[in-house]
Amino acid sequence: MVLTIAMPKGRIFEEALELLRTAGYTLPPEFAESRKLIIEVPEEKMRFILAKPMDVVTYVEHGVADLGIAGKDVMLEEERDVYELLDLKISKCHLAVAGLPHGQVHHIAPRVATKYPNIASSYFREQGEQVEIIRLNGSIELAPLIGLADRIVDIVSTGRTLKENGLVEFEKIADVTSRLIVNPVSYRMKDVQINQMVERLSVVIPDE
Picture (tube, helix red, strand yellow):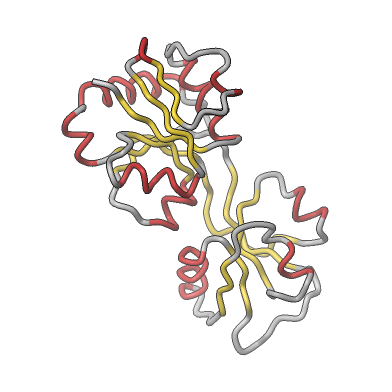
């Protein structure tokens, strides 16, 4: 049986490829340069679907992919019906609240721009703070600079993008790494293959 794995493009994809190769999987050298959205690796009985990070969990939940590699940020935001099998400890970053260091904040309902509306809403509710969430899909750092929002909730890796745009981090919400996730039905039907992959990856996961 072929295992279908949904992978996000970009940094997570490159680090996940390296991890799979370290675990002994033979993947074509031109794999990372391919523009194909579906890549077959018949010698390993694997098929890869390349997707946007937010779409990986959707593909796994609906069973078009048996497995997926998704950031914990996506898992927290989407709350899909999938199992989380393994913390791969790659693509480390964190979710944070940021904004202009001396920016004026609306006291009644501060506006928060983010592509993580569920995470942001839950976080500020836990803080006992009422905010207005503004959903954006990209360039979140722009929102405070043009007066669209008082604060942002976004992924922070090195902090360089914040610094270059004159923003500072106020609060850390959660640490984020990439996780191996599985469709519940696939886990029952292909348990031997999936557990073998978990065992092989477990050995090569980088230390903290």
